[in-house]
Image (cartoon, rainbow, N blue to C red; front, side, top):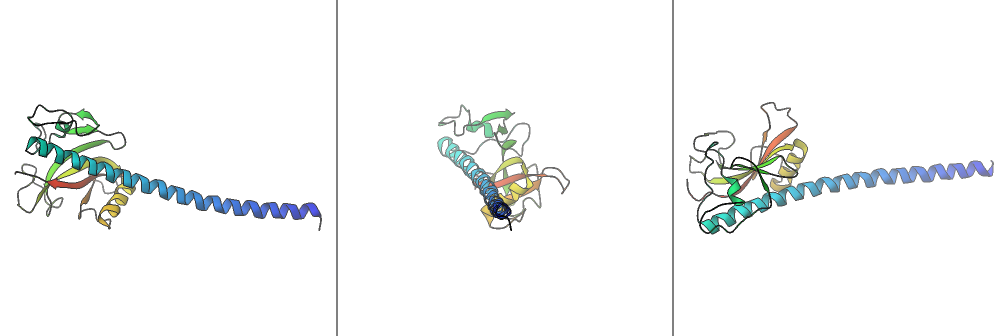
Length: 194
């Protein structure tokens, strides 16, 4: 066998090994990036929850209901308010629309509702979202979250990907269950008054 032919074989083996290693490291990098997005989203949700709690401690009352969409809370009061005791802004967001939507850089929008923990989202009463006395909580909403990311967040927080149980609830962005996005709801702190 010629000497040059042997070198070519060695080079091909080395390239195959480097190729296999790059595929393995690429998959690990993709997994790490996906996990970082999940952890960042959960951290954002926790910061919003802390902001709501700080507002309630400073002002001594719940966030008001929105005048236009009664099921939403005036989350914009976390950024600006004339309430006595207010010492915000509690978040570094901007107002997207009306009194009930904040603009988020990564997720479409951030909103806040109060819902009955045990029966929601199976049963909904838009006129009074906390009506059974089972435990009314604020729920932070990230709108139009990619389903794969939403499911990963659900698994990270609740340990399972059940859309309708646990601290994370996922509702399809449209009535179509094949929708590529979900609205992600995370249970926050209890509502003071009903």
